[in-house]
Image (tube, rainbow, N blue to C red; front, top):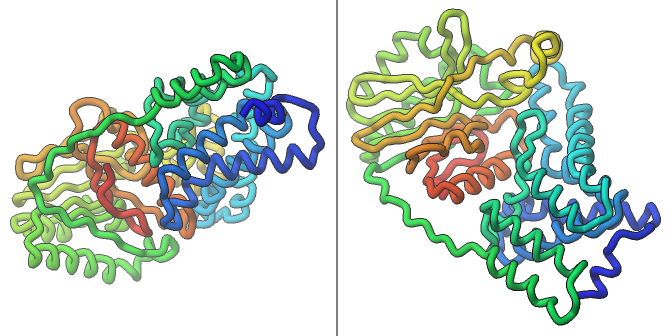
Length: 412
């Protein structure tokens, strides 16, 4: 082990070696996502690759860190630019992909400011709190979500300490690192409450380029009511349909609302759509139950998708020139809880389900709805579900997730 660290410790390397080690680090850092995506999730492999990736980030050369950051950004977020195709600015796709690679090269590049391993460990832990442009999908602890290591902050401290100590301790104390790794193991077992309701989660597969075409609305509406009728026949008590499955401002369609209210006397219905209120647009969930309905507005908006996390003068320019005015949704001030047949749920719409704000407070069950067709085909649904699992595991919550274009299921 000592020789391995001697070989990895900061030293002058050739460009070829730095490219190789940097790329290897990125592959190890990202492997759990791709293994999950292709159905090969094995805890021991995820544990070893995660520990190896963090070890390399602590010990490799400064130049190799920049290479690893670049390819981590690419491997995790190459798909983000896909959505620009549906905003009429498809030429931006490769630019956005490259931009995310650069952003995370600089993100991890902060650790390349020093050659001291213990300072790098401190910087890595500090980076675990940092979200570039309010985008929180790179969580360092996420590497351990399907491993034998825990995902809490104190467990990350133990891991980084265990990986740092071999650079400084003498042979007679080398086993102290193992003690820190043992302390970082996941010993928590959460007992979830049994769900008293029979819930049907609907998965749809509507392509984004077809979703908002007016000519396709009748077929979409027919499909929705067919799913509802089928759930009624199968004796479900609640049916959950994906985000914006009604591709319209549902509150401007009273006949549809009336039809859903009638159905809600037989089965509770949770469905995604849009809301226009005082000339303001909201991404919302409609909840129909016992002949009544309520609306849950989205609280956490998607950076550069539903709002622009930049100063006002830049917001207006980017929104009009790159998003055709579409990135102007209004957010709710707080999360929405709703009760169906005595069971309380927290509402989450897509990106929200991957944010801690949704899990704050007294939350046991979350109903999440998503539209992943913006990024199909890609690893995005897999990464999203891993993030939801991460927050569900940290907070002891069970999430019922209904999606368009992959990702539907119960996550805990």
